[in-house]
Length: 260
Ligand SMILES: Nc1ncnc2c1ncn2[C@@H]1O[C@H](COP(=O)(O)OP(=O)(O)OP(=O)(O)O)[C@@H](O)[C@H]1O
Image 1 (cartoon, rainbow, N blue to C red):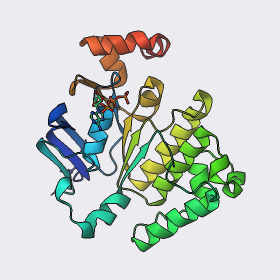
Image 2: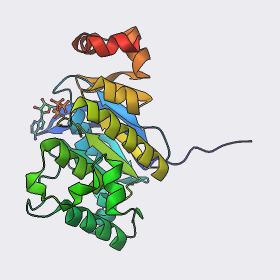
Image 3: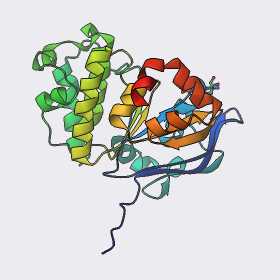
Image 4: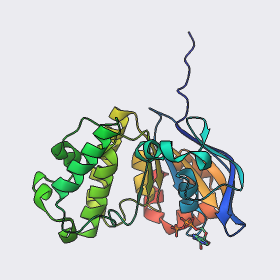
């Protein structure tokens, strides 16, 4: 009996990318496939983690190699298909929902996300209440105006907006920095459940090793623009082959003690 792995939704092959003609990352190979386990990227500040995410969503054009969405080169996706790409490949960044009118209620924001998804033929079939539950926000938050939310609550609403479209790929760039550590674990647990149920491929960029340990069976360590080690977090930290991995381990001694 042979099993065929599902084709990747989003893929980087030998990708180099940067700004103003200078590459920040190079030789990046990455695959996000439906139903596959979440993948993490960790590494020092300025290593290029967000640049990889920007290249994956087409904000930064690769200078070498390719980024493809269902086999199509992302930088060449025409206007007609841009909308589908944006609903199916969702990036959630640290800023949360910075572009939303602060007077809108959470109910209105999530209701609009659900109706936009329905129009795009990509509805998650969820309700506002279910989306709130997916990010561990109580039902009473539906009535709150976005401008009155705390930073961590805004970040969770941003995640819920992304989940509304049942994305094929969810790219999380430090999505929970403002959520307190105790709650962060619960949000990640629920997020892991709902993305696994929907078959959504998840990429998590973070400095938080505990978050990676909870969500991602595979992690890439990025240093000086390339992946210097990849694998299970405990194995990567255990062998600490590269100086950047040793720095990571030193910066998070308590977490690392738990992993060893
Ligand atoms: N728009 C830009 N123009 C020029 N250089 C940029 C731009 N955005 C980022 N850079 C530079 O690219 C490098 C990588 O930045 P990037 O944000 O990808 O790093 P990162 O690993 O995500 O860092 P952090 O963990 O601090 O968020 C940095 O040296 C940064 O200064």
